[in-house]
Image 1 (cartoon, rainbow, N blue to C red):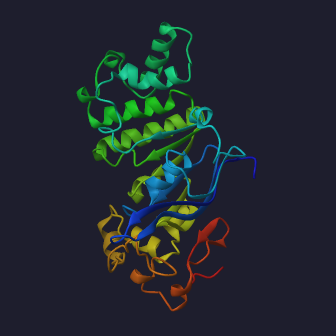
Image 2: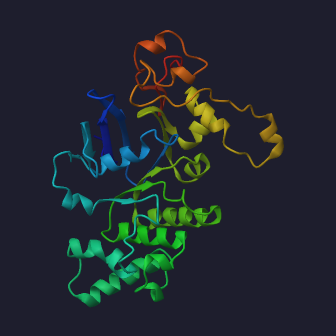
Image 3: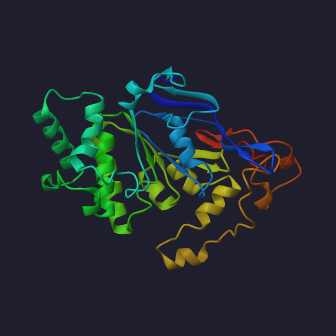
Length: 323
């Protein structure tokens, strides 16, 4: 593994068994054979429609969900069977919903300080309080909020508490699971700018999960596109926006609003036909073929391999050829 690679995911799978009928059980392939790497200090964006497996992938990487198969390699070590207590100091998560992810019975001091307690990262109560106040200041929260409860805060402030909690153990890697999707647009920009500042100051590495492609483009160095549990395209952020190659990526980008009305009128909107297939009974071969105008007989046979079409630009589509 390259020296600057912090996280590598190899052929990761997460399947759930569900009932399909009275006695029959089938596997729901929430994440199916996904592989990628994230370099130190980089932000990898992960996009796709709701239900495509983005959150499951993020939580499986942190082993909040146990993988069905594949390898998770962090800093050169396979962590599938590792004791995760030490790795919790290195790998953290910021959850999507700032209302559901904070314990309403705990004060800000207890929420942020919980990780300090678990990992015994202070000598006495005075040092604990000093560390909590420093973390609050880091995310733009006044010290007067120290003994307040989550219900006394706005959504944006709650998400700042969640970010401070993640930073408490000085992690190297953070999964940001749609951290701004529940916030007002004006607050979203503040939180995104703060995440970028923290990354610069602390050398953080992010997996940034979102469905808003405009947000992902702003913060990400590279972007992966997920469809029905499969990674279908992966490229540098600018390259993906300039030259999307997978039909699904082209459709997603055609729906992103453009501020310039003249440019917006010129652009062709690609309409996506049909519904997302059921993960209980997905189509054979490429899962996108039932909604793809370019699909041919070969697409029914097997899922196309993720191939490097151009340097650093990977696509899983039998219709896209190497250039």
